[in-house]
Amino acid sequence: MLFGLIHFIPLLGLVAGAAIGAHSGSMIHIGIDEYFIESIRSKVTEGTSALFLTNIDAVEDKVVKL
Image (cartoon, rainbow, N blue to C red):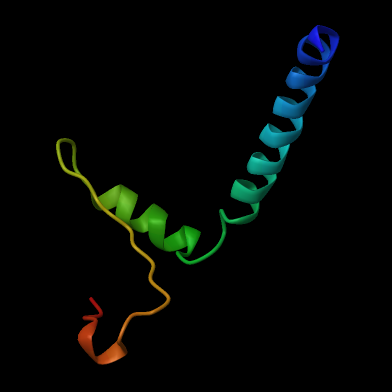
């Protein structure tokens, strides 16, 4: 049992880390266009911030498009 804990737990962590990394990497280009993010980034001044949100279940007549 000690052999298994010493040798297989790091392998399990490696597999879990790879799976989480692959999942988050596949989600990176969903939702907000890169050009839009770069245009907002150039407009945000020091000491301020911008927040980007995506929502699948938004009611379209309740959302204001700027």
